[in-house]
Amino acid sequence: MLHTQSTGDLVPATLLARELAITRRTLARWREDPRLNFPQPIIINERWFFRRADIAAWQTLQANKAPTVRPRGRWAGEQEALR
Image (cartoon, rainbow, N blue to C red):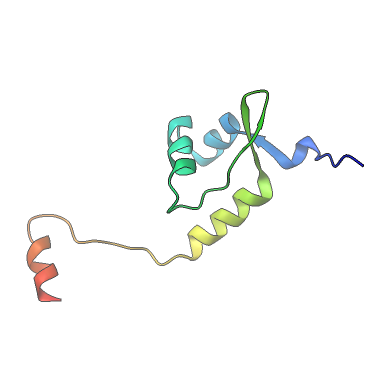
């Protein structure tokens, strides 16, 4: 038996990028960066589609991560030395 997935579960890369307010290139960078663990696309006729459930789970993980803020600017080096 062939398992098929309804198209309602998949979102094209162009639409996903628009929904996330990013460019398609940023979407590609996120996909290529193993540190981000971004969901991999399903490729159909050379077009990228993402599972909505995978994207929602990834967004939840990102929201639950503690922000990592590094000091920047003129005194950043001295702040690092004080730790």
